[in-house]
Image 1 (cartoon, rainbow, N blue to C red):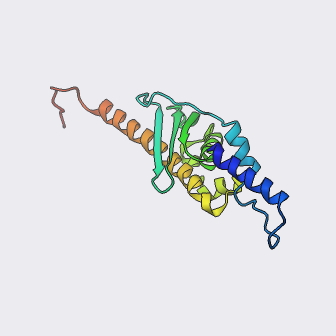
Image 2 (image 1 turned 180 degrees about the horizontal axis):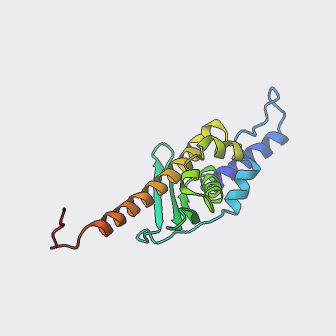
Image 3 (image 1 turned 90 degrees about the horizontal axis):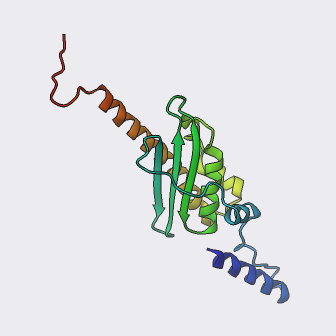
Length: 173
């Protein structure tokens, strides 16, 4: 991860000391300062117990680049508000930054509201180049998967609470 960033810096440093070729300065391999900030100081890194009924887990990956992202939400069951969130990401600086930004944006918001966050919003915020847009797409997919997982757990609990205990018949009158 850091190696890619460092190679970019080395490329730029050598380009600055070499005569410019047709005005080309190799800056395209550098990460934007917001990406570097979230990479160096990621927010909300960690994980929750996936078996906690108030936790939703989204695990997504991109076989094309090898990035894997786990994003978790902890939901207040009475209000539906996301009270805490965390992530673990294996991938490039843009994937880590996208995860970090996503957790900042969803904490304290209603589940329905976070589903409106689009990868294009994250990409724009981080100034991701087109070749790194898949990272922001993973973040959007991870948010949706975490919400879906929480809703599935909640529905299962509600079904279990409304079903009669085993061995008892339901009387319909």
